[in-house]
Image (cartoon, rainbow, N blue to C red):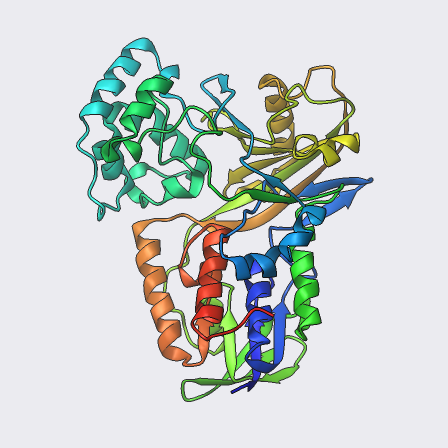
Length: 457
């Protein structure tokens, strides 16, 4: 039976998908997004005719046919709109040198004595139990002391500004650091047939062990925002009422039932159901209820967008990772290398992501100067390649540091939201169901489409 009204809060891709799916069960669906842009970090912008993304964002097919049709259109039309990539071409910089074949850290860069010691420890390490959550203890049991202290401690300190003992092991998955390169390619292949070594040793090339489903990037001289904008058009065509530049000011309750939402402009929306994809604490605050939790420590993103006069020295990889603890740069997107379409446009632009704390907002020029020096030091940009244009974006709080306290607090907070609002459903990162976009989209689809018997239309 079709219900009357559903409000989806948050206009990221999970919110867009949720609003589209909700039209199958509700007469009226409202999507509320506080910014004036849809898609969250999956956005792009144009500057002087040059297209930039807000970081390296290349989604992949999910393998669920109905879901992929919603996300990317009918299979017969997808090739007209998207490039499909079997893997992402990546390299990484660590201890002053490049690994040209993989984003994984190569332990063979350690000094000879330390390297020999780390190999023995790695092979003898017993492996951690599945229930081991502390990152320091997990690393010791999985990799041994040398790799833990000489590689993982300084790298995690660069990324999160915390010590290993204070964070959860799942930060490794967040950054793709759960495996390491340590032996020859052939020995690694043999050892990876054993489960105890497969979860700690990485293949030597990004072409090995790649996901079976391809990555997707829009065709033409477009950024990744083409994808959420396509979802937005699909949602609107299905009847979703999109309210941009709006936020939820107040949640009105009848007992534990949300009967209406009041927006910042005083608009009142009666509702039978709420899908919440933004931080759950905001729902409690809007209802006049204290979240009762300590705010997490966040890492912030600063994005340094640059256009140069000439091609880059790196003319093949699509993105680069800088694990070097002595550098600010983290992830670098080389737009001309993403596709032949972007290369043919003849613009030489890139984006560098820097992770920091909130103080970065007050030293953007200093950060930009350091990053420019690092681009030349790492031989990504030639010394004589002139900078034409730059734009520095401080994005503010991007993701919480996964401390034990945060994870426990988030679990309690989600439970409190579920007990407080009987007709509210948490989706996306707010639900604690995952970090990566494909996992969150699949989770949302299963909860909204499969569990409620929605047919793709």
